[in-house]
Length: 166
Image 1 (tube, one colour):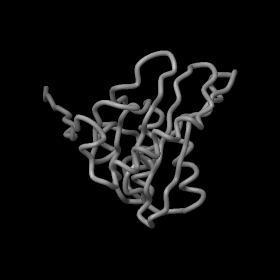
Image 2 (cartoon, one colour; image 1 turned 180 degrees about the vertical axis):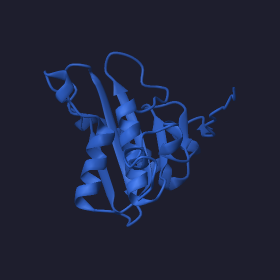
Image 3 (cartoon, one colour; image 1 turned 180 degrees about the horizontal axis):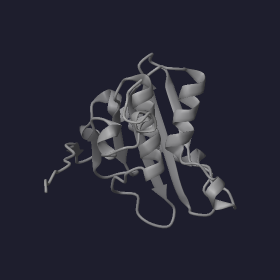
Image 4 (cartoon, one colour; image 1 turned 90 degrees about the horizontal axis):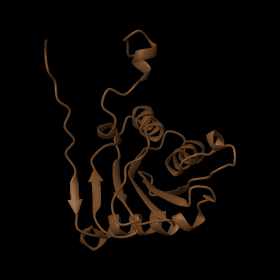
């Protein structure tokens, strides 16, 4: 038997004030985007903003539906928009923030598993890892160096191609 370990190295900032100007602006945009979320059922508004390598900015918000499985997370709205509007343009950094209308919004949370898989696919598709900034409306901020770090053992194209990387 062999034991292996996954580790995730990430930065923790006491608040958004400690971020670089560019990261602070990107996070502020994600926080502002939460107001555009359609979350009448969960009351959990999520906003995501990404800076692409071409300098363009893309936004996404969660969009709920009375038929719960039909809803879509902010991260996947953003990634779909980016892939459609700017095909094959990598993301430099994505900031994700949330506003919990029924509780606190003062600590970072991580994307759901489906969003993590989609983020890893986007990195693989463009051949470029991207930084992920996670935060609530206040409090600590995490910066993850690559979305791939959030999903060890991700399912990829090579799994579908019998282990080859065609």
